[in-house]
Length: 392
Ligand SMILES: *Cc1c(COP(=O)(O)O)cnc(C)c1O
Image 1 (cartoon, rainbow, N blue to C red):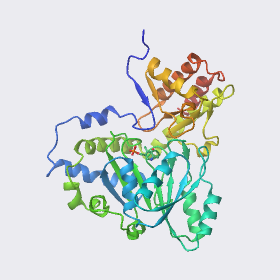
Image 2 (image 1 turned 60 degrees about the vertical axis):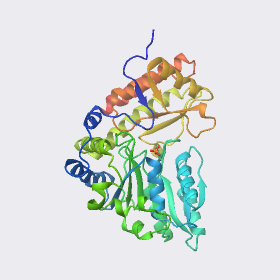
Image 3 (image 1 turned 90 degrees about the vertical axis):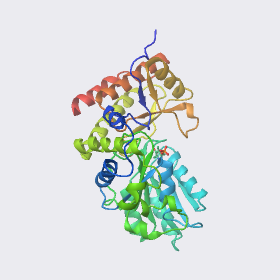
Image 4 (image 1 turned 180 degrees about the vertical axis):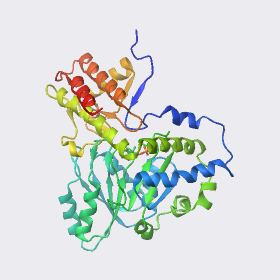
């Protein structure tokens, strides 16, 4: 007998669940790439991508994943020998810093560890020491997918302004975009990178680099023609040719996903993610009362609404994941970048996710905890159900 046959659920923090509507929108013959509908659809993405980022700035579209957007953001603003400050709260900001290093940029890092947000006071001290304004850009991840911490990006802007420091503020919103509240202009973010396969609910392959006039003026000698963001915001030049074949089907998929987000309303999308996260946390609050389980981020104010990282003890993280995967058809995220990785697991709850899916994930985890003999407090699922009942 197998209890895993049936529709499987990929509850990892990206790629996320692709809505049937998005897949159907992509299921078509290749369009004419020289003229017609594809150009109109491509152009229509721009105002909507800006609207959900709450920005009047530019957005450059790349055929590439989040790593491509990371590199594009840096290449367009920095020169070899420049310095950036990486505010690391997990594996992802360090990864972004690694790309900077490979471009020939000097990387300073403040490492806040794997279970805490960026500490604004330590950031302020680092800026105060940089009297010559050697630091050209601050690299921060809004939600670090490895630790599930959510950082105070608006707080970074306040610290920069208080210090009178001119560094660009760059935010990685690959995991958080379309899940956690983000307001690019109000929060004073100069450059933001995201990709299509998480909260934007489209199969991986497109990424977006948002930037304002200050970032555009920074210049930098790292950029090469293909990655130049200016070419990618000029409709006549770019929408037609994309510097190569357009990512035809991603464009149609992204259009449909944006339609879904806009018809729900971005505020309602954020509220849904917040409510479902509360249900997850409620289950863990009970499960952690006995045994090894604990949420990686203890303060709810700094927990992501897109992904949840949990410590389960080594090798319980891997044992639980294996049980859920093979016995129940639920794929949970690995303990990416953690030591030891088999002590952790992650739940992706970004994008096309509703209450019954979250209750299914939590119910399966509770069954897995019992099957794997991992001690845990009794009644986690009931606590989650109460949250859903109260908020729904
Ligand atoms: C997924 C992710 C990335 C990397 O995106 P890829 O598309 O896998 O290259 C970068 N940053 C964060 C926060 C992510 O969650």
